[in-house]
Image (cartoon, rainbow over all chains, first blue to last red):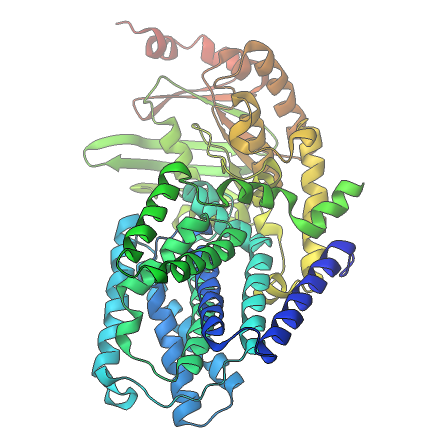
Length: 316
Length: 256
């Protein structure tokens, strides 16, 4: 079992290559600040979608409160970097840990609920977070939190996205990840196989929240300014749309979904009156003709290939 | 020495006594049959043995490694205690491969932490490759090796049953509970299964309790049979004794 083989060395080179080329284009001004803004949004959406996919797509827990974890992370990073003058890495780490902690706190009581009940409970949680944000003077209340330093660079963004995708993919292919997928498939059978379902649901929730917190930190330190309204119900729905659009239980799907949906809405900005109509129509058509999402089918294949271990056993 | 003691076990749902006042002891290394007409309480009894239900009164005591009473049963703890099961209406993870299904049975034997699974530390590779080896061996025993990458839902019914048994065995149990293992199998498959159950009992040093309607299977391999009717235990003994028991005949065929 080698740590480096042909396949993962190649993908590592590809990851670094994309980073270097895009970095060069940004530094030389070939990619202007407007396009870069959209790249930042895409990156943040990838992190949000992949982390929500872990909760909803893989573990099967329908959550409508993902934006709340993002907002906890955003405010934590905002406070740490703007008010306490901490460096960005402290902001990101603090954001992730605060959001993860919120994931545990909200996960333990709500994850005994199933399906629609869980969705409503997480929705309620998101509203509570928003209202606390609106009424806390320290973080600016309804006027918002200002003057957050702009630390989010291409490097930070790219490596946070890469780390999120890599770590969640690794998790999914470990026995803990398999346990989560099994819970999504059949909770009673998973339990009979020795899976402590409560523990793994809370674990998936916490991990998802952790990465949503990182997305929040990147957001806060790019846009200078935070207000609780930006993390409402609609933001949670946006993330869920990316996950469903890309394919539940497919990490590739979430990445492609985040990119495609952002690009589509970018192109539609030329026709502002019809933008939301066309956008909704595209979603509608995708759901009618491909209800499993863009990568729905191939995600199953993706599991069957299962990387290093599998390749080694095939070799025998 | 008995490995299972059932003392005055009862379970009621509202006013319905699904299982009432069951007493039995089961010795290790045997294949035990549980039979009875539909609705006799057999599956409820299984669910009591595996912690899915907790008894209304009475208790089950296992003596597999150490003494464990049904007071501390939780479904997810049972494989840790050495008890694994299959389900009457097959509960495979339909969208997972056969390999992943059986790997899931191995869940409790995995020893690595969250950091190892996120960062693929050495313990990840050590545990996963050991699990793969053992699971591939199991799949070979069940003649499923060449189908290991197919989705569980794509297999025919009889083979899905086999995957379920393989998955339960991956948990390395000492006691295996099979809920109607031959349901939906043709006579040939049943015959093959009978031989297989006998073989795994010796190979894995198991005690097996099975619920079954197929009498040829029950009479062929069980050393002891318990007969349920209306939630009570009406007879027990060797297959021959039970077959000639008047109450059993009455339960199955009706009569005065």
